[in-house]
Length: 225
Length: 218
View 1: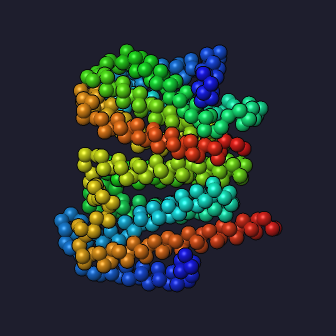
View 2: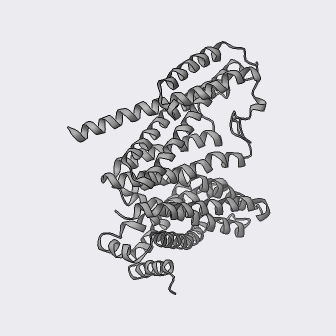
View 3: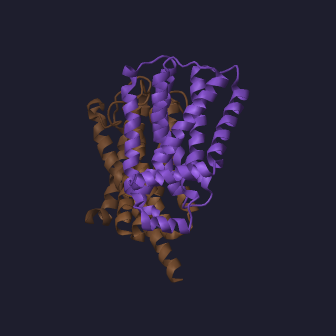
């Protein structure tokens, strides 16, 4: 934790991401039919979704912490984490749509994975609306934490289990975590892919911390002005 | 019967029986929605369409029913409850009550729907079992969402946006099984889908029990 809160984590993430962007665009990749060069998108698209999941897990952790300790700081962290995850989710969605247009011929195809992603975005946008519509601050924090935990569990059931029941999916990763099945990822790509995931995680963590500090500071200014 | 969950449920039924407008209102909502659907869709509906329209109507009916779970209890009555009951009893009673009400409503709804749109069911037993499990699960999720939405303003909109994404997993499994039952699928093909419905409802029940105490008291 000490490392993650130090500047070294940020520097590391910048260096990893420079390597990932350079390596992602320049290194050799296997030539597969249909995807061709667009396979390089895996470093960015999958990285975005993994970061989103990572930050959502943070949000869940802080919501649980809030219900245990009732510290306003935890509520703020959960709120900020959800907002951060929405940024990463939106980016993942946009990158994915461009990729889908290139390989499947349409920006959106009716597929369990894609629909699962859309539902996730809807759930967390609803979380923000919920926060906006409860006036009492204490009740707002409690209700938001409860909804976050509830939604997280049901959403993960949705994303992890249901697509696997579907007869067919055009999206890879039908019987395992998408892109984590390292057996079918080319070794040439693995040496960019794994750093990419680590780099995006560190980057997401950094964004989350910065956002939290700004919001926390704004709260304090409000309190003392 | 001294079981507190049961007594809260009995109180709900008694209230419903004394002022029938709520049940009758929802029933009328169901009938008029089916009739609107009949007028807009008649003559151009196939099996998947029949199934999808039925479930959309059931979804909106369920939201309408569950919406009222917590809004009518305000102020003094809530204080009285705080003294008498544990929060778990309250949410359980609400869920079971809503589930029972919705099962009855869905059976009536199915009869009226079949009256207007014709009855293409090839395996009615599977369809009804699946429907009962489905609406019971809907009741569980929607009751909890109603508890959350009752703490906020603009109830109906909030209730819809909170619950629609969350009921989707259950709804998709149910709709799939339901369509298959419509076209003559058997229990042996679908026992795992039914199990998933039950599992999702159980997860919801457990989560509601754990989380409801935090939002019960203002």
